[in-house]
Image 1 (cartoon, rainbow, N blue to C red):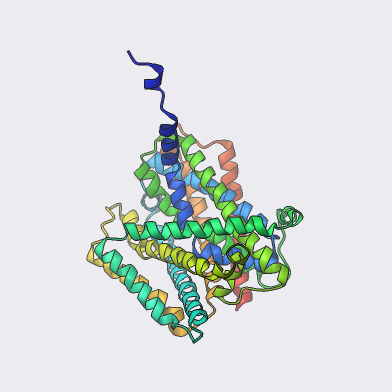
Image 2 (cartoon, helix red, strand yellow):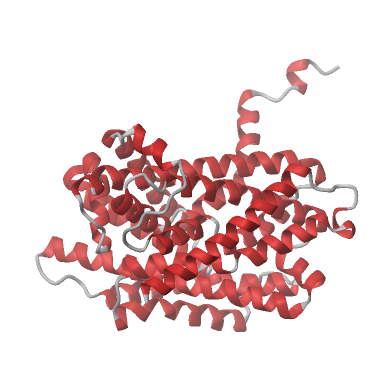
Length: 419
């Protein structure tokens, strides 16, 4: 006869079970928090203090709504997102969506490698007192490293080390944010939506939204849900997983912005070069700030470049409904071709910070179509059957569509003003 101790899970078992239940959300945080988010949030804090805090709130809220809806769609259909889109909306429009997502992917590769190689060039210049190791040398070296790991299929341990370094940088931002103590009144004021009338805030806001509410992250969410094996009985777990990850994501982004607001903004300093972001953690690390930031941003960059290299084959596999076999010759050619986009800025030049922000601002261009498709499908009788979405979720999707359309408008305005 079983005792209550035998039937009830222990505290440790409950902890492991909770950790497993939010694993997809943790993956999303790791995917989103990278070079793009650090650059856009730090620039926002340096240029406008905490006045754009509302952007972080809305980005996290509407991303949560989309994650819940996309997860629901995957559970109801048992299929990945693009495969479902192809079956319900046809091949042409789905191919257009894939093409749009791949454009944002390529833009991200260009921006991330520009930042990483520029930071390494500036850092080596400071260490040696000379011109530093050229960007193209760093970019070519990192590209060959990542392609070598991909070719050999031995990237697991490498990515875990990078994740540890990114975590250290994230902790540094949190601690620094508490040390600089941004004015609570500024934070409260920043919760009220407003657009500054100096600079090019439209492009920056679109970039902040794009780095959080990223189309490629949302599409790959369906693969995680499918691998997790969630069913209609797990809708509450999906909500909890998403809510946890988006809340944590908000605080990480807010901490980065607060660091820049408390160090650069109050001194009237802007982020003109990637290495300028080092100053955001100087109150904590002092002389070691450069080394901590450089290794953190390098880890964040390389850990986001690797999945970006693989995204094209993943999207194609999703569309065709086939196994993601990365050893296929066609996929290998696509990965190598994709990686070469990272050499564009080191070869031809450009402002890494502005290019990074612009690359993140491309994501909102495809978001309204993605929101609309998901909203239609979760309400479609043949898909939802007896699991119709709640009134609250439908209202949320409607507001998300309006918000994403407005972000599309801001992105277009930002690119026009930039030209």
